[in-house]
Image 1 (cartoon, rainbow, N blue to C red):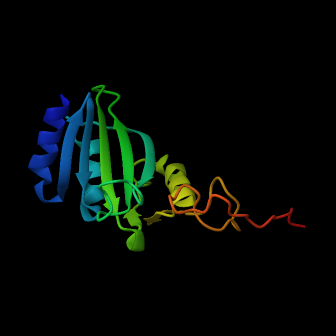
Image 2 (cartoon, one colour; image 1 turned 30 degrees about the vertical axis):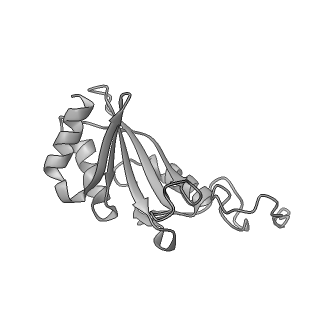
Length: 165
């Protein structure tokens, strides 16, 4: 299935949930609404023609200071999917506002999303509704802020935390 065919199949099934699609140099991308994100991800995994059975990565992008994105949602959560059967890739994105930075968890679909979502929470502060154990993964619990946000102060000093006795 080509990238154009993948996008066409998703548009046919989820027309109202598709915000935008594009294909550039072999990268096939679909931007979906937050409300239908889990439905789209489930279809990408379960539809035999799509068969995206492998969640390669889940990350986020902070567009706070990106030219041309000043009025849009601050964050995008990005899912990189791959079909082991068909050999095609698909990028699924969902846009999230800063004051409501919450998306549904993908852990029931791909258990590896557990660690990916914890990393995104830790670094960007995007919450995953329904996540079984959303806590910091790379930083200690007392760390203040989310260091991959564009507005994180570069010279900020964090409290030193010693071993618990």
